[in-house]
Image (cartoon, rainbow, N blue to C red; front, side, top):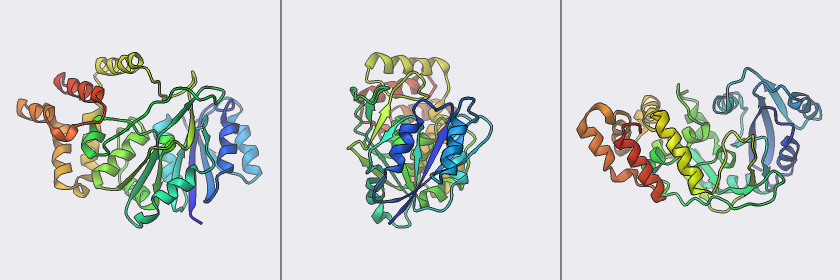
Length: 298
């Protein structure tokens, strides 16, 4: 039976964490261990984790408040040996086959780095299903530079992928799931996308990141990012070059260099603007991504 270490980051999570823990304990078909990092909770989360650790159901530790991206990165660094590693939020609820399905999908990858993720099933605070956001990605490297769609709580990686990730710690991470997926695509890892959801992704007012199936909400958030002028995509491309340029194919390296340095001149700017490799499945992302290049904030 394959082993999966679940990596959970918590922060003031007492309202929903009990249901999530029970759904992890109910996983079938794999040997599960649970490692929790508390990101400086001030409620009863740590006391709850103490009780669970004394019962032998998990191990946990705490530290300074790092935010979700670097809290999960710390978990990845602190994890023990396992066949697979799964990222876990504190407020969702997993189907009992979630981890077994992921392990089966990557069973044939052997020593090749591999990533699995699946569609999400959106639910409200009471786990009642609501209209979900459906993605149909092209699963190309160019798309990954433009379109940030992977939901970390659905993501499972194998041991080889973890080893690749720990070779380089980026100075800039927007979110851990975006970085992991970008690295996987950049180095040609095996990528498995499951169109069937195997978890309930709870939407509530305290979500750090959520999904809302509303065009007005999505475009409002995009406009906020445009106004903030964060250069998220080009900064991520620069980090990918620093850490993985020697492991990229020539095509991927060329595209990454262009994405990282497109503001170096009009020629580079035009090449990125019209680069066919950046094509994404959603038309809206194609449009907003090209706008960000036009405005120099890619």
